[in-house]
Amino acid sequence: MNYFNTHTFKFFKDLSANNERDWFAQNKQRYIEHVRDPFLAFISDVDKDLPKISPHYYGDSRANGGSLFRIYRDIRFSKDKTPYKPWAGARFKHRDSGTQTAPVFYLHIQPGNNFMGCGIWHPASPVVNRLREFIHNNPRSWKKFKSNRAFQQTFEFGGSSLKRSPRGFDPDHPLLEDLKRKDFVVSTRLTNQQILSDQFKPIFMQHCKTASPMVDYLCAALDLDF
Image 1 (cartoon, one colour):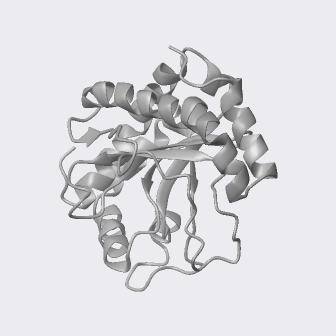
Image 2 (tube, rainbow, N blue to C red):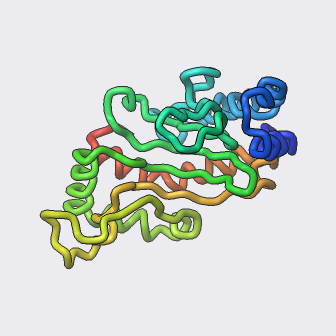
């Protein structure tokens, strides 16, 4: 099934060149028809398949308050006052994410900058400490998923890291670079052609499956079921 089409990318290119309220008001129906509604249909269909990977993850296809990020930017504390995001993104969350930090599966659609990722972005210090302790105490499982060929060929780690070893950890630890992480995320690029393909959902689901051992590991570190 095709969810997105060339009009999806054309809308974002036009929005980038006309990021103002009057233009968006005149083109809102384009956003609804070519971005929002196709993305909500994609989320709904992914939700049906996610239990094959984990029964604890889901997609929420509500137009407001669900998996899909709002297109409206929060400009209250930003120097960039453009009101709209020139991209669309969605989080597929753990069912306990309302009460505690949990890893997510994520999809980002933006002309020339599409990607799929997973993990925990900008966790609070207590969560970072728990993750580091877990990696320190359970290195074998961490190394196992990182060394998996499909995982290595698909994903790259991202986010920020400490410049020095974290306090309380051996600076000679073999997993020091992972212990220094402040974000525990990986991502893989997606081409515009993949997004427009009728095979896009199988591609996305395969990436979720390949990344699932890492998500499972992060859930275990936070005492979450997977």
